[in-house]
Length: 191
Image (tube, rainbow, N blue to C red; front, side, top):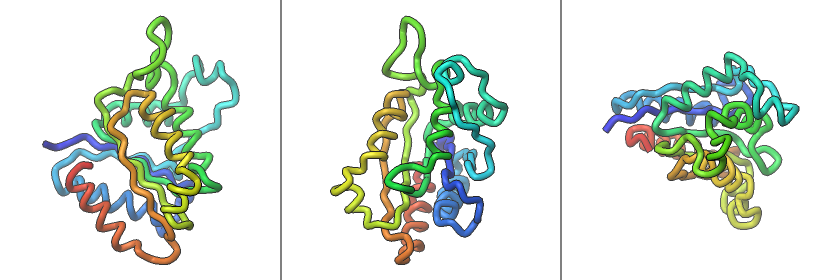
């Protein structure tokens, strides 16, 4: 059954040679060829301001770019989130994206019904994280702490489940063709 898929390409560098962009392209191309509807958010090309106050987060008016991102996320059945690991976590631009887009009233309940589950129930997600270190080191030594925070504190709290992940380590050592083929397969399956 065809899905509506939003791909969030979270590499802050717009250089098209980045592996994250190639992974997003591979997923999008195969998903589209398989009959899925695909819309993309490329954070390197999206104006995402940083939030500075609680009031702005709770009651501020999202910019037109953020409203466009919310429309895409709201439309999708499945989110594919791709980003590089920087300093042990997602890049600041990716965090700013989630702070701006997953606001109260859009992703999180407010008022007397505040809390979990959030407003994005019925959606699933796939997170793909690239890194220079071996993926097992990030998962077992560092306990994949930032990935777990994204899964539990943002996506699942907003009602998104299941959330699956792929960790791609040692990106400078090669292996890109294998991972690009893996994203092609996931795109065809809409997974």
